[in-house]
Image 1 (cartoon, helix red, strand yellow):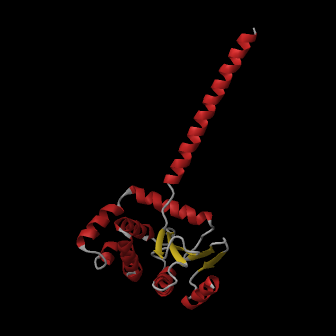
Image 2: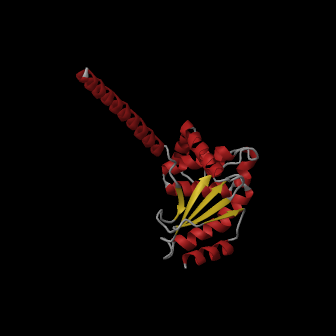
Image 3: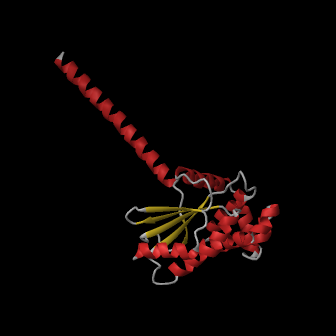
Length: 220
């Protein structure tokens, strides 16, 4: 009787350990998959380890975003990434197409994300062109024409093929979900985050001088 109980207890222990092992393996596998699905951040400028991080949620077809990109973000990039401040500020770009009011916003994002696959320099050229030529392609969705001067024919043909990849829509949905999780409802929305975790949110188009003054106070 005692030997039978011992054997039964040992069997139950082995079964419990086996169940625990399977459970832990499943959890670790799911964690690995979650990590692999994490969206890579796209940097407009600066070093990923910079103590001040600017995150911008923007829409290529948004007129206010166009002004913000060309008149505020571009000067900030020049000011903080081509001087000795390069390691103090980074600018991360998030796509947040407002599809309910901007008919061609998602199409523009597809081209933008496809361009990033060709390289950060190609992405910057495409983003510059999308914002600079916004008025033209917003009328008819002919984004390809807006990019003809930004890329050579070979790159543009490759870009068209890559923009049709369904995986890009998955990435766009992840970006939109990220913005929604941070209560982004309009563009541009900007978060400035320090290395201590302090966070300041700006909605709309803060001017270049105002944003520069704010950054300089944080850096000092």
